[in-house]
Image (cartoon, rainbow, N blue to C red):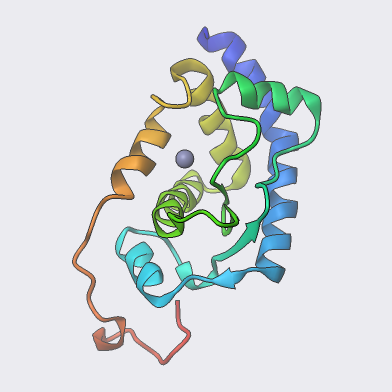
Length: 172
Ligand SMILES: [Zn+2]
């Protein structure tokens, strides 16, 4: 898609999309589980800020925004409308229940959490994400490529309890 119509479409989707994300992030964070220790340490080593605040929640099917105009955007991105294995809503992550690759999906979604943090807020993340997907395609867009690549990274993880800044358990 050309840049200008893509920019308008991304702008139209990012406002309502950001509200939807905020609401679901809140639901996941009130009902979901914290990351297991090894994934939390991995996320921290990959540059995710305060991974101890992230929660994930398994769902029979991962919810997507219901309004039709957003669904159309979503399908333009090449997303399957149903049957997706994970969805990152900043500090809340939806996982499809029964997926055998939970850990790989979580690593991928955690890189998206980092992208939200780099963008500064949900709206700006969504704006660039939608714009990239519309102009470059879902599979080929830079943010998806980064998530796929970085999810495979195995950084050297130092024991957080040995760092001078450590102030006791539960510090993320
Ligand atoms: Zn992704």
